[in-house]
Image 1 (cartoon, rainbow, N blue to C red):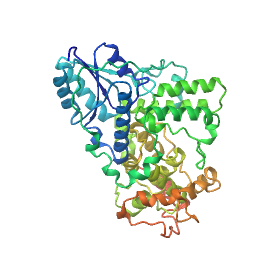
Image 2: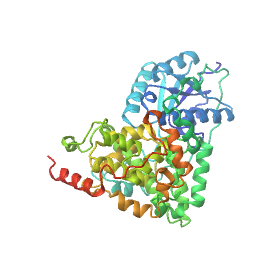
Image 3: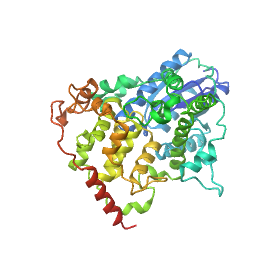
Image 4: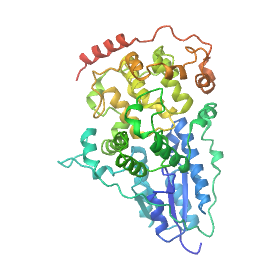
Length: 472
């Protein structure tokens, strides 16, 4: 190559617009070689997020091709792959957008240190969230542990302007690339991939369309509609934010414009974006939240941790006999997503009615959700269990029966996802049985459980008794 290139290492930033690392690489004036690595962190992902990450990377590769560039796909340990590419191309710098979960930070810190020791410029950029975790401090200089003061601290901040897509200088020759199809990232999804795929909106163009449609048709009623299980009242942008197919900053400014226009749900939408930032704020400052009780006194609480128990299997399979819980679990298996209100209900039922450790649910969601996010997943589960920061009070136990009456008043959500209780069964409900492992031996013709494995009243009493007798 006549001029030494720079590498742009993409991870969860599959977009051309508002991509600080890509812009910085292009502004260097050198040829830019974008690369995606199926590395040691990707290898730890569950079935659905690993598959969806691969789809996002391939869509980004197509977008780069349309822009006169391309995406080089490689597999292996991140540092080894980057060093190999540097040797092959003569690259003098590597740019990437920061991630904040413990696994990514461990990888990135090792990469940055090693490349700098090699004499290579290794530059990380802000781009995954609105505000860098270390830039939001309490009056005493610490980090925030409660959401509302965090929101008040950032709601008037300027996150910066949305960056336009850059012109990407191409090298005279390209390094060899793997074919991502050979990685078989969908293999763990088995037959479920075919069922889930129609529910996805993959790529930057789809993400921008999703944001535009929500701003035009959904945001005004968002504050109320987002809790109605039967309505399509949410933005569905969590999927695209997870893979960086749209930036949080682009969503923020769209929400601000909607607020200026008097759209009543706009502030609630902005608060949800900041809730995502708050999750990363906590993951950065207290990384233990992703793997252990944030409130360490909960280490002594006698949760069930045995995933082989019948009630855990029933919960995973949507066979608890508590219809609202089962409908939500089946929605996740068919669509790869779950309504946010339903996430709270299934988490409360598992951790409180069934007295099972939140890590069982956290791991299951990581395997099943296409919008899995390490920070939001961890904070959500610990919030529901009562062991996390700013958590729902441990003595608050969601009643799934009254919650169903309030947020699925006419039963439409339950009918959409429960084939055994609907006559005739909906196509969405029947598709669940086409997505699940055949080894589960379930069929739409099965009888639905006549009684819940744990009733609302009995489960609440058992949970409150355990809390009253806790050793902390």
